[in-house]
Image (cartoon, rainbow, N blue to C red; front, side, top):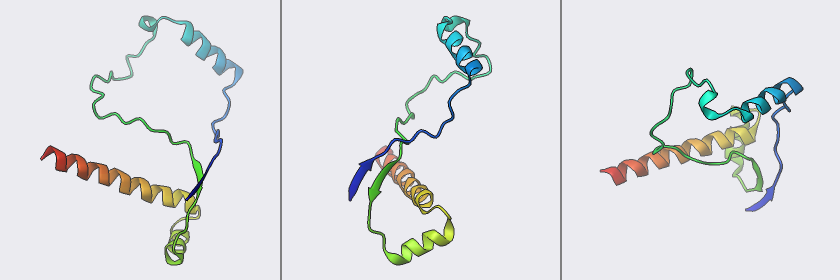
Length: 101
């Protein structure tokens, strides 16, 4: 599998007003920021850190699988990523259960 790093920045740039609000917030002491509408997270034991920055790779996919993916989703890449993430998540859960037993 060949891998190629790509830059992916699809988020729109903040407006001038948004930048000013963010800068003012950054200057504000933490105890003055109103977070009453946000529940505090005290247990980080299940937190997962990962990057969703896409990378371009070249893989060989069997023809019937590729055709099935095309029928399921107009964007084969997104469909393949959804499937792979599902399998990754399920595998992680199974491993956690088997080590907890």
